[in-house]
Image 1 (cartoon, rainbow, N blue to C red):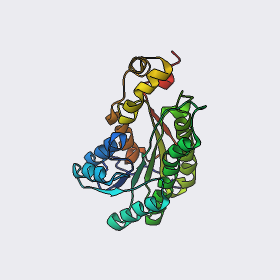
Image 2: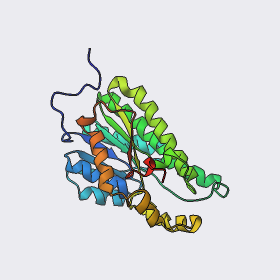
Image 3: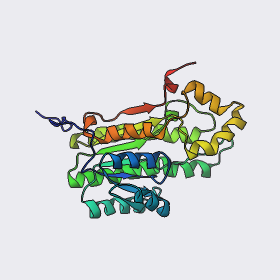
Image 4: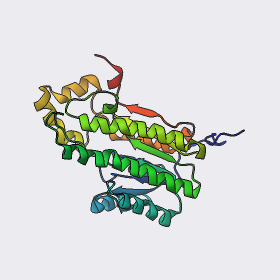
Length: 264
């Protein structure tokens, strides 16, 4: 009796021969993941709503291409994976990374602000998982789907009720999809990064300071040991994309320097 996820005789972390799609890959975590995948030999499709930035990012990578996608639109997401099918005939890895962040107290948050974030952070992940899985199933690929969660999915976070709710939903969506797709050998896992030195964090740092009356940099130094390096997050994505993780599915991979492990 064999399991759909049984390890092959020779296990490797190489991604040579694999086709990978990364959404929201023109900058930040998505770009770091695309760079890591390319360095491991994958053929990477850099996808982003900003077509010019996506093309620029892909131009710097080995065997990479770009394709614009607005993850809020099912037609746009479907077109992305139709393009991957036409260009490569298969899909081995997808990272549903596209996301946004903003800050507001729950009592002052507008419904439009809530929905704008959910349309990208949750709807966009759902659509990416859906159409990536359909392409993998159609081509018979035992692929890896990786969603980008956050440690805010694990507890309450002031000013980020919509963001943390979206990430908690992504984690549960990941688990459900993992169980549904396990019989076909498709793995679905989530990465939960802590606070990294990205534009999302930089753009909102002062708002945290103003609202909470704390030195945000000092809090990060004490609770997390400093800001995450994007390569640390990308390295976990590379592991989940590789054959070394063939028996890993439905998992939450926390990358936070111990922040969520400590009460003090």
